[in-house]
Amino acid sequence: MAGNTFGSLFKLTTFGESHGAAIGGVIDGCPAGLELDLHMIQKEMNRRKPGQSAIVTQRKEPDSVVFYSGIFEGKTTGVPIGFAIHNTNQKSHDYSHIKETYRPSHADYVYDQKYGHRDYRGGGRSSARETACRVVAGAIAKQLLADIKINAFVSSVGEITLDKNYQELDFSLTESNPVRCPDPAKAAAMEEKIRQIRKEGDTIGGTIMCVIQNVPVGLGEPVFDKLHAELGKAMLSINAVKGFEYGSGFEGAKMKGSEHNDIFNADGTTKTNLSGGIQGGISNGMDIYFNVAFKPVATIMQKQDTINKDGNIVEMQGKGRHDPCVVPRAVPIVEAMAALVLADYYLLNRTIQK
Image (cartoon, rainbow, N blue to C red; front, side, top):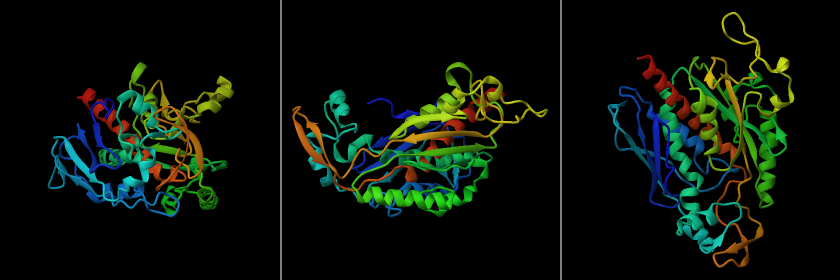
């Protein structure tokens, strides 16, 4: 199975399955001498871990990170950073009913067709549990990018949408509620919606906005390695993501050039920021902001028709512990993937400047 590595200079390779002994990764390319706050890394992990509130999966995992290499006396040594997160609360029997059956809108069918053999427990390698490894690497990348601020938050759940400009929001409120929406009134409505959907045995989708501030001018490369292209790839690699847009996004397609152009100020900043902080694939120093759309979780607690390995139509129903809405736990994953992209370009710029 290929495709387990992300990044060019700051590189993450992950391993493991949802119900295996552990998941983990190797981070290559992190410069030596970076003083790491290991408590900050665990704090980021706690934001993503299951069982943290009543509106997420009730699987109980401490998600404690164990580092095996690359860190000595609290600083990176420049060699690959190896780490693992041991699985402690697997309930593999919850998945025995799908051993020979393909869940709708899951990776079950395509994994079997491509590889001929799959770990059906919790989805195996296709499980979103793999994203815990990304959060570890992202937490280290954030510390490498100390001056850059990355803030993601839930901007919609179903039809309930945050209608404020991100500049009107207080990001310190994001962690004040289980939905991770910085608007308390909208957060309460979103939480109630998720609880209602859960009672129905169903799931619902939503969106996450990410705002990146204090980005220097010059990150990104023209043509194929544009900054927004890499951000798009990073976000679309996250489980359940169905869409990515930055700056004006699809709304920009409705505008005239005279409305959409960002007019310069004398100091190189712009009066508006419909470009989303990126022009020609390169950061321009303005805020980078983008939206990520997540589909409803595919496992629902309602009966559905599907097919089994023999091609017969069978009835199945989801079992086990699943998120009714993935976006609250996906907020730190979006931040982590953004940090990995920026860390890559930060190191590339540093290499070029040398």
